[in-house]
Image 1 (cartoon, rainbow, N blue to C red):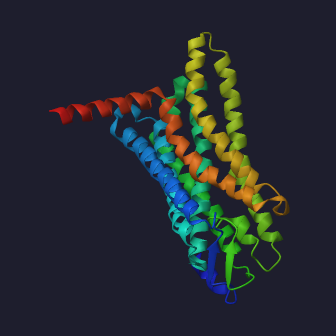
Image 2: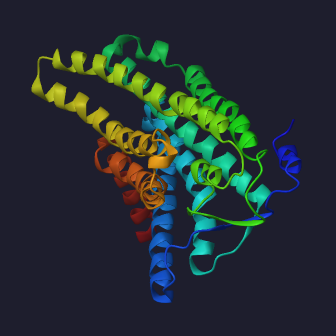
Length: 319
């Protein structure tokens, strides 16, 4: 059964959803709209700059920056799935059809899961680079890098499709319902179901383990070996350089997995809706925004490439 066909099974369910408003004050609505729009533009510009920098500088054509550019592309797609619809509903609540809600949930789950898997892949890349430097180019071949990115996306699709289909085959309590969130996330949508949700909750929990706990465990194992190897480096400068290549990645990992675990590993009855929305704002805005900032401010190669690009542009304008 296809993804879209599942929507037709629920003939008595709702046809539309509306999202919970942040505030009813017109002035605050305008301020929130401008603030979130500014953050969205910064996310697009920052991640596009990383993709462009990696693509145009041959010195950055390495597995590490290949994964980083793919991560930036994911952040652009991920935020574009959520933020434009959110912005359109800040000023006025506009109902969305059942199929549109399911489509947003599917893309959110797929892109978010791919993001988590890719962070684990990047940890493996750092493990090979630091623990097996002499064999790095032999192990991290271009073919393997492409396979890892494709595998991350394929596994995310494999997990997201049945979960989204399962949620939208259930009956809902009404014709037009309010989602206590700013996008179609799985836990708040399940709260609107007029049926036993233990089965989808169990599936969600298992998938959360596969998407969050398993990659995070692999990242921890990778960094345990990385730490042991770094501590064996005799020079302090060498240890500092090795740690600096990992600290940016670890910062993004802690934000991504920390917020995701707080949302998806707690029992539904103990999850305050306002707290979930606040956590969702972190991985919707903060993580995609910090990703390019962290990797540019803490990475000398990217900073040097950006400086060279800006110098060339300034020189061409002066001619």
